[in-house]
Length: 291
Image (cartoon, rainbow, N blue to C red; front, side, top):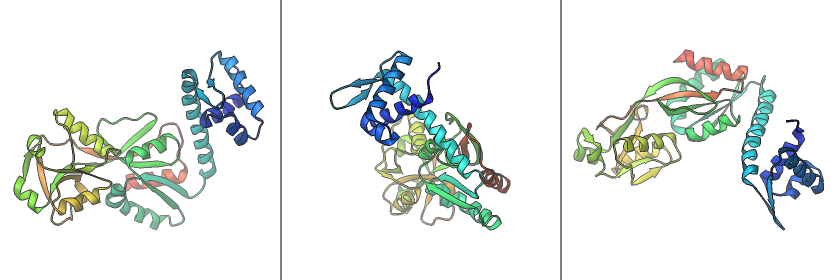
């Protein structure tokens, strides 16, 4: 279909703003030009893209479908521009959660910075789920994420770095009540402390409980594993944490669950379609070789 790309560009900004006026302002053209372009695109596609009201417009079902695809195309184009702009710069942008940064990445950062002091490392701290979304949109070079064995994500390649276990933990008072072993049925009788729902780890926990016909209903939902550990130390409930985070903790006891939780892994997450810069490749190879 021979459609000028400029028509899709005008459609994108109109759909983004749901306004002919705002689209015209952003594109530095007249409102009439925007309106005529939309009519032209509708004619070429033989569909209505917008429902027009007196003071506002909204996407039709067909318009919404087109917008989802055009938005994705624009994200790829913006990502490509960013990649080209920074392709030969000594700079990388990495996404990782606070827990992964603190308990896994810091030694790698230290060694890499010592070897390549001229390279700038930008770290975006956020849950793994948000990091994966930014990689899909081309907004960072790669992420270091915590995922389950069966996780697969559209347009993202995962390279496993390390296996680890989510463990059940308690403070001294709760451990005296529970002992070193608990079934899921017994665990449900105690207050639980977990991460919030917008994390891959919480999704993993919910699915684990659901697979045995239980519902995870925590008493406390925290924003970080460090806060979970402090709450557990204060004997406010039984928590869950990455095994590496409790290796040197005092006042924390591990409880063996029956059935046991499946192992998970920390992985590189990178785009399947967008190339890595030479600098990003250097850092990735550095981590793989240092394992």
